[in-house]
Image (cartoon, rainbow, N blue to C red; front, top):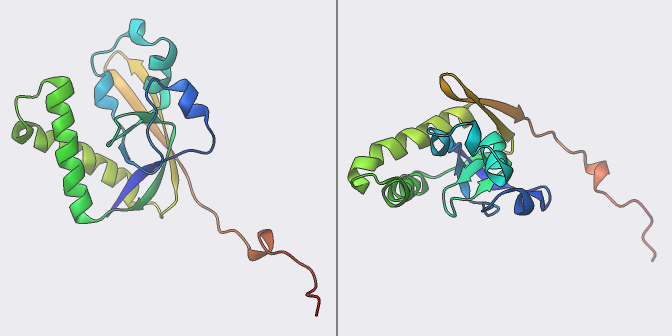
Length: 159
């Protein structure tokens, strides 16, 4: 099974999000955070999180890019529990047991999004508010094979 981990190409996420995700943490879309938002909420760093931030499932910070990678079943179950805990703590779900199916659904949607992509495929998200609610669009940037000549140092060995 595949899921996605937060990646950073530079330090910009540290400046554009209130709480940036940690490099390497598992991530989901996290669009549920914006379900009750209006245009009035879309200002500053909150707008950036809404517009293109994935949600890290360890720090619950945001990140611009994620990369597809393999996840073990045990890690997946731990993430579901962590996300369910978050739903209780932050969103007032009545219990972890009640929140667990919703957390599992969120992870399943992310796994489905990653399923048809090779490891190291980079994903981005773009959100907008519509009359019907939050609309998400996803882009996929496939990893390319790097040729050895890009990394090899050419020269002669002195004897």
